[in-house]
Length: 434
Image (cartoon, rainbow, N blue to C red; front, side, top):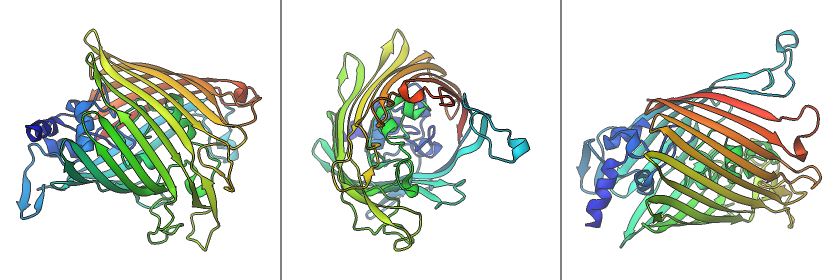
């Protein structure tokens, strides 16, 4: 009976999780279902079916045919997709007369970012209990083509699914190995485009105080060991904050997986509200290269990977319309060991962030509006570390795989009081996948 329920859930699953973008048509092709069967409100927010599809390692099938034989069961088509993000961003900072001076324009001028992401994706079923996700960045001029790869191996243990997931990513962090929340614990599964403003975890993950090869603290390679059932999931990951380490030309040897990540989350339903309530802790000291060159071409230093966070997510109905509520708290302490620094904290004071937001669908699966508040201490001296934000969002879906996003953020606090500081940012973005 349980197998029948899981199979039905899989058939209902549609274009589920996608790194840094909307729904992936590759999964819609595999399942034969519409994107809205798996997404809450708009992409990339996952509903209960979407989380089940992702937890299955992308292996659940639907209408698509299979090639089958002894120890063989895979789709008869290699399912791929293209995802593009075209956006315009502008803030209040001083503009540059780039036409006269020949200098690059700033956000103060307003920037048209065509191909902010232009990704080539493949993903889905490899076998009965093996899946994969591959992301290729077609506009990474100086970087490797592969942006992310994970290969979930799944084993049934009664009512619990156990997964072993080797993974690597250049930008999405250790949570790329496994995460089911849509609140921004994982950078690519967030309910609004301004990730630092609506997610405490993502605020800490964008420090730019680490070596150049990991400036967004998003590079990660490791193995996630996960146990998941209807109650929730537990994830223990051994990892390194480096991309494709041990690979040809990589900056760090493959043996350096000295960082640890532990994540526990409950996924209850309370009076028709579908929730994710969790806690995460990470730590350890890991080698990070000071340059993109392979060691011994560059200099390797030890950096701390310590951070703790708690998160809450609830999806339900107000009247006949969907409402999502999200809250997070994250803390990255100052460095207390022999490490050079912390990839999540600035090092002078503890970096502490609280975010609270809500996303309401005025027209179901068509038009949503949201708002979020961030209260943050950015890790600088306590007299200048205030970094708060108020954000408003809107998403209009032209189609299930084509959407227009608008975000506006207003910043306040002691870190934003000098002349020339950024105090506002707006983003207009078109996302499309096919």
